[in-house]
Image (cartoon, rainbow, N blue to C red; front, top):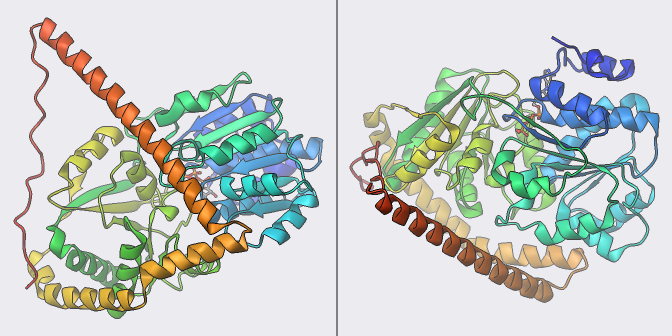
Length: 483
Ligand SMILES: Nc1ncnc2c1ncn2[C@@H]1O[C@H](COP(=O)(O)OP(=O)(O)OP(=O)(O)O)[C@@H](O)[C@H]1O
């Protein structure tokens, strides 16, 4: 198998890899590094934890060492934490170059960032919103001459999710040169391939890992069917068992809202578990502090919303628990990909209520693998049921008294003012964006319905009725009220 040197990387970079313990290139690195060194655009789609970051960082550093100037490379990424993680990889691998990098993300001081940008760093790693703000408000830097544009988690940057990057991306794309190399990476790139291909037009090289299953083999994937009302008792039971059976452990629990995230964190702490929360309504400094404490195992449990579902590389994570079944299979793929990274073992347990069975089927269809049932001693769960429900209620009351929702609004407004924006104008802009999104959604739905009708009428023509939906594989468990 080819080593890093055979891929065309210089000896100093091969030595950097060796020092970091990267002995052999991973398949995505084997595929993409030579193409990037050749000057081609690249779309790299490989499973979570397979080394996509180094697949773009290494060839960029090589090209930078041949012709160093600032700003040479711009990396865009959907979350702030991920921006810091990517910067770290550039710093470590590019140390012999004396690499200057600059991180441009929301929630941090804008003036300090503007100053850093004006010093022409070699590499800028940014979230789209904040970089677009700088482009609109400052003329002290330029990205007109960048040689590389990287979109990490490219499909997320292009989709219209709860944070819509499209307007900011347009502003950024208008400011970068047409003659550049564009590199797009994600574990779920194929879902938005058509949109992405429009961005990478310079002899694009598409690399996709060929595998029958879309999640990693070393990942043990389970579901646990739980009645909605007793979910938290199951969660406490799972964690207690895991803590009893393992010495050195770390768990990430994903939730669907910031409020649930906060309540679960309070609740688990009341039970004496070392838990810390990470969600978008926390101040940025608190977010970084929480992640740092989890990474250094001061806290063993990270309870997070989907701000942590993509890209974060924390090798010690052995288990991912989905407190809610993700509504989209690709969110599932990224969430469970926080464990079993770089060849390690890992386990993912998804709590599934009677209302979520169709979501599990959609996930299984996408990942091309059936989840197995995780069994627990229900009698043990019943024993703690009342206590868990009482503690949860106490936490809810405490959070309501602390005006969590209101504080969230106030924090948002404060942040906007700090960023030099008018909160009311921003609210108007958001409302307009939401309207456009809703219009787009309706349009998409109409198209889908028309396609369905076409399909059905074709099936009628052939005299075959459309296929009936398969029976739900998971039978709903009996609902159990709190004792
Ligand atoms: N050639 C290699 N040999 C061994 N380990 C590697 C190699 N390349 C990268 N790694 C390690 O693998 C881990 C995962 O890499 P990385 O974070 O780049 O994954 P990814 O493919 O971007 O995952 P995700 O899709 O979740 O973002 C990192 O800890 C990284 O240091």
